[in-house]
Structure formats: C-alpha cells, structure tokens
Image (cartoon, rainbow, N blue to C red; front, top):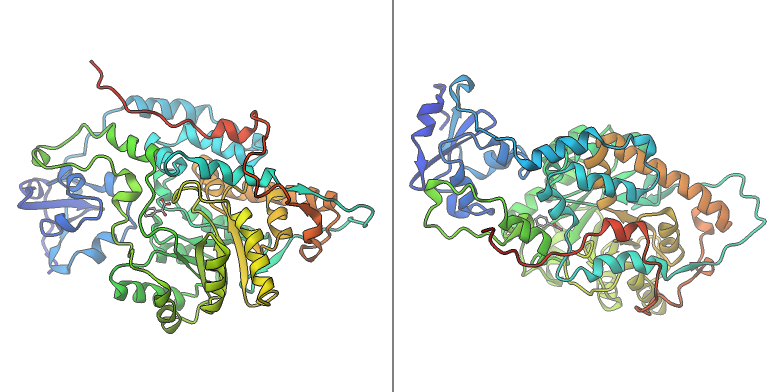
Length: 499
Ligand code: 173
C-alpha cells in the first residue's frame, strides 16, 4: 500500500538491518527485507545501502522499473523528502581522478578513423569495472581473439572494370530496410559506461537507418528504449528465457505489441561463461562491507554478469520452440548456433533465422568463429535443398571491425552481420555521436571496399569473391602488430594482499 505521508531520511535510516531493511531509490523508499534472499545480485550489495539512498549503485545495473515491478505494491513506502536524506558520500577515488584526467584529454571525435579507435578511447574513459565487464571473455580468451583472426584467414578475389561509379550497400533484414548489412547487436548494462546507456544506440539508429537489437538486460527499460525510437523505426529484441515462462510470455507479447520486428532468442548461455577479468575486478574494490553484511558469506567472485543471470533457464530445449511460435507472430531467430547440425534442427523447427555466434567469445572458449561455422552451415543447408530460401536468414556476429569483414561474411552466405562491442565502445567514448560516427566509418569503408571488390550492390557479392580455403586451419599466422592486439588486454593472475 502506498504511504501518502512523505518519509524523512532519518526515518528510513532506522531500517538498516537484515531483518528490517529499507532503501531509497530515485527518491522513494522501499521495504526490501523479504526480497533480500531473492535479489539476483545477492543480498550483500543491498545491505551495503540498508537505510540509505541506493540510487548510485542501482542506476547502472537496473532498468528504472526493475524495483517497482519486482516488489509488491505493499513494499512501496512512498516518497522521501530529499532535503532530509544524507548524501551517500562518494569520496574522490584514485579511479575517479584517473577518469577525469583521461576524459579531459580525450581525442576529438574528428580524429577517430576506425572502429578500433573507439575501443582504445573507451578503455580509458569508463570505470574499470565497466571495462572489465564489457571486454571480458571466457576462460583463456582464445575465442574472442579467434573471432578477429578468422576474418584474416579469408582473402578477397576482387573483380575489375565493372563501372563502380555508384555502389549501394543497403539491404533488408527480416524484411526491414537497413542502410547497412549490419545490425547493432545486443549488449547488456550500457549505463555502466555512459549515463544515457542504450538510448545512445536507439537515437543513433533512428538517425542512420540502422536496426538495433535491444538486450533483455539493457540498463534502460524496454519501454524507455521503444519510446526513444522514431515512429516506424524497426527494433529487434534479444531474449533471455526466464525460468518463469509466464514472465517471458508477458515480455514477448508486450514487445510484439510495441512493434518489435524480430525475436532473437539467445541459445548459447544456459549458464554464463567464466569471464575472469570481470570476476577479478569484483574481488577488488568491494572493501566497503557494511556492518550488516559482517558474518555473511559475500560472494566476491561472480562478476557483474553472473551475479544477475540466475533467472536464465538452463532447461530451455528444442521442445520449447513450438511454444514460442504459439505466443508470438514475430519472426523467431535463434542466436548462438555453432554447428551445421544445429542449423539444420533450427531450420526444421521452422524458425526464420539463425545467428552463428559464440557470444563475443564470452561463453564456450575455443568454440569456433561464426564465420567459420557459416561455411559449414550454408553447405549443409544447401545439400538438403533448404537454401536458398528467402524466408530463412543467416547472420554472423563476433569480431567484426571493418566493412571488409562484413563483405566476407556476406560473400559466404550471411544476410547481415551483428556488431556489439564496437557500438557499445562508441557510445562509452562519445555518446550517441560516437555511434553515428561508427556507422559513418562503416559507410566510408563499404563504399571503398565495394568499389575495389567490383560489387555494385549486395547481390553482386558472391562466394567467388573470397578465398576461404584457409578458414578451417587454425594455425595461420597474422601480423602481431595489429591494432586489435593492442586493444585486447592480457589476462592477469591471482593477486597477493598488499602488506
Ligand atoms: O554476455 C553477457 O554479459 C550477457 O549476455 C549477460 C547475461 C546475463 C547478465 C548480464 C549479461
């Protein structure tokens, strides 16, 4: 029940124990005592703010409506008089000093000329924890590097003298117009790196005619994102399937009602990969354990993503596909296919597409690159007479940094390519303008590469334009002084306590 009276800071502060825990978020108080054991991110982080204003910690990780939808109305205690609330004192840390220094010295956006540049800049202007979470990949980070290397094992076979005065790289994805054969792939927790989070993507997509795939675990709420889109702007939705299917059904049907044009169900994450950079980062910097947390086993090795992923249903199986088809008319695409066998099953299950993906190297380490999988998938589907089929599209993601990468994937049979981290880094570094610049860089690269390849439109990009004979050979050397080698950071070992 909503309390009509405005509460004061000292009143809220009295409820500061595990048995009686109130917190303030966005100027309103909530009784989270019963919710503590259910909090996907663990109790410890809430208890740290028991009786206090938790907005700073809440904001980057949760959509604004997470607390109101997860707590029953009886636990919504109503507004708190802001003038009576003690400010959560945020001392200026070494990290903040570092961030200020780098933000002041940030290269002008005009000097950014490749997608790699966004990564170089983002690393230094976002909090260490954000960088650790975004950049991390699983285990020994072999696959994240392989995603990049695979593109370097495919070589072009360009055609000449074709009058390339006009070249056009626009296409359609699931029947929706796209100015690039590229979509913005889902990445979670955008507000860790920029206060506007995923809205930077939505607004840039609106201005450039590119399609954004909205993440289930975006920092901005789904409705905020849809509200920020222009009328008619197509959006896709990435779906993590909840253990409680009723929640998933409502979420999917709400998305359909709001006009989402494609449902990308993530199928490669029944459990989240162990991303050691993220896990290590969690172990440092959490010294501020509050009194109420003492004696409690504080899980310190989870990392940001694992901590909030417990709702994802590991029992998801092929048997669930008919159910998805029964609850929505949106095209269904399975995101995270890694073999021809599963591509065939997906086709036979009657979905409209597949994303050949290893989740940006964040799930099964030493899984192959989407590009390599593409070759076996198109061969197997063709052999069964399943391709060509205008109602079944194949996408690839992971490691794409150049239009030339996209052209290779298209030549090998992809309809479009997903790009995740580079757009994320673009907005971490320069907000919406960064994303627009990233798209401009793609346009410039497409124009040049298509001219040099002798392809005037997307249909003229054919398998004969690439030599992929080295693709399955994993030992081809590439020059070690590549830009991407300097953006990938070495893993670090266990840390000794400081004496
Ligand atoms: O790759 C990820 O980090 C991811 O997909 C995820 C999953 C669960 C929670 C947060 C992010």
